[in-house]
Image 1 (tube, helix red, strand yellow):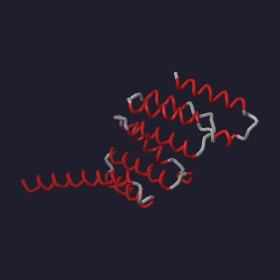
Image 2 (tube, one colour):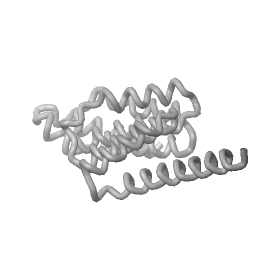
Image 3 (cartoon, rainbow, N blue to C red):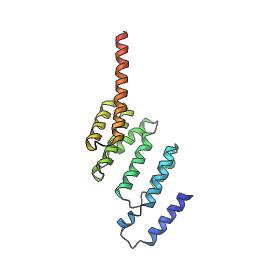
Image 4 (tube, helix red, strand yellow):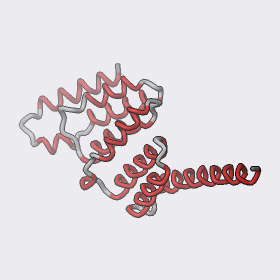
Amino acid sequence: DLLLWRSYMFSAITTNFQWSDASSLATLHDRPWTAIRLARIARKHGLKQVALLSLNMLTDCVMDVSDAFAKLREQILIYRDSDSYPERRGGLNLVNTTDLSFFDSGEKSELLRLKAAFLNSLGGRAKANQAYCQSLQICPSYAKSWLSWGELCSSLAGLAEKQGNLASSD
């Protein structure tokens, strides 16, 4: 109810200031923030359809680059958390078709980190490794990429150790 009220109030403000420039209204990013926050909470509670509906409410509004990135990131995370192979493949396609030129280095690094996570979940560990490397080349100080890449390397080391143990026991 509170989020619906916020959406109603933002619509009222937008309607009353239609004479203003659309880009200045985008700085009043209450409507995108509310929808993105609702989508994030719904995703974390496992309500994928509610999250997607919340993000789809933003198709007709002007938003700044940071809100567009937050919306895109939430869409990608919804697909990443799916158990369905086609949905994870769709999430990877969403990342691959995104024009990165609008985003800063941290945002680009996050998108490449998510691409690597998709590749890893789809069985492409070598390509995931390359995507993590690319993510860290763009923004070497992005801690999430370092952590995710370390987790991949650790899992690869564990896999190599198991294969070595199997080979030596034969």
